Length: 424
Ligand code: MN
Image (cartoon, rainbow, N blue to C red; front, side, top):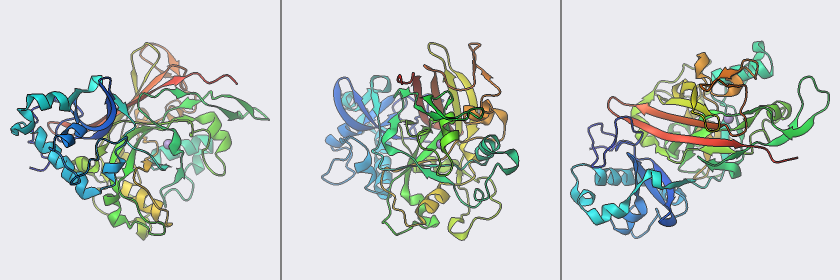
């Protein structure tokens, strides 16, 4: 049976609303208090299956005679290529099946191979050589353009012809749970003549997904759009933290710099593109038709429900946004083809953000900038407090999943709490 088959069951119990049924099998890196060594695992229900243990026990051999799951990141595994990703996922699926006694009935091995997720600390799953953030939601680009420029010229003339992006900062990509320091920077309010330096007063989140490059390309050799999909390993959730007051002052003419370089958080589990195949849907119609190097056909979008919530210190979280990846105007294949069309080389582990994913309705806006219309319409939280932008000690949690008839293929979550700025 294919690892995506909805009839598959695991001997590990999985709740119906779990993000991690046997049909998912996302890859991540973790450590435990009992064993500090970082190692690769897959999430199954509320457990983590330790792939380094399986490798050692010779139950899993991705590359003959070589171990790839006892490294510091997943890069060594990912760089083996799509055929081996599939083969490894199929082998893991087979070992977890309810009707396969090999691991199920070996109590000693099971005790070593499974770790309760709650007892593990998740690590950065990959080493990120390069990080690019796209700007592919038409709703988001229209909203931001309306606020930062004017409603009439919200979408710049190039937007409908190419997936706009900027080269982000890879060094500050952090895993879920890492505290996020409020940045200091230069701002100039519309009523000020000269800029001032200090903590950002408009700290924001951006609800995004990101894909991870699994196969690179040589410098000078673009990836044709028809082959783009085979260069993508999987996807994560991403919070592209943004300081709007710094951004508004600095972004012309070269785009965001200090306003986004201080932190980008990702979820620890990489859901493979293979696991997401059943959830492909048609994306929004593209008018005008893109140039031929960006032309695609068929179901290029993914039906993934996404949510963001905000939790003030010691208070319950309030859901403030519900959106869906299917709203994204430019597809992953188009983003990758466009990125390389100049001859730019991508490398294994490169992180490609979708851009803020906003939908057409007022509750589907993927940033506080849009939800509060640049701070002019505060939102109410369940504890009675109001927010225009993030306050110190606020925590932002982004979650998402694709829903099948009887199971979910989910991403878990990416969370991060805001820490007060350093004194200036
Ligand atoms: Mn972004």
